[in-house]
Image (cartoon, rainbow, N blue to C red; front, side, top):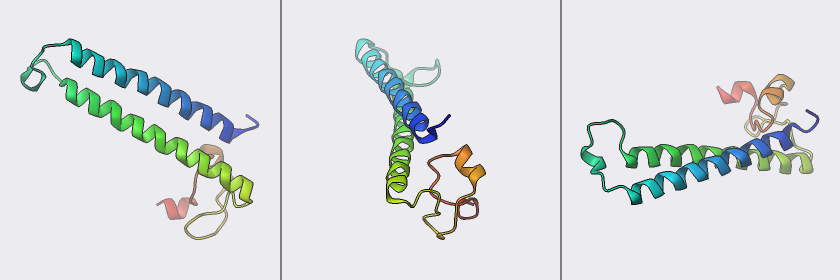
Length: 108
């Protein structure tokens, strides 16, 4: 892929869209149900499912924010430089995580 940040951005946006639809479906299902989900012995509650999807959605939004920060770093000429120690971020790390903000040592 010639534009790894563009690919990461597209993937994050797709994930956000899918999770947003899933969240909306869970909310709609909870409105349509008269189940006592707090005392349901059949597994996870609707509230638990809603919170789980909300957490995944927040994670996807952070991923998008990281990608957008990396795009700004490219524009500023500082892409590939660790935000913590100022050393270069390894090519292997950037290949695996194009939006990485820190080198592998600082990430540990």
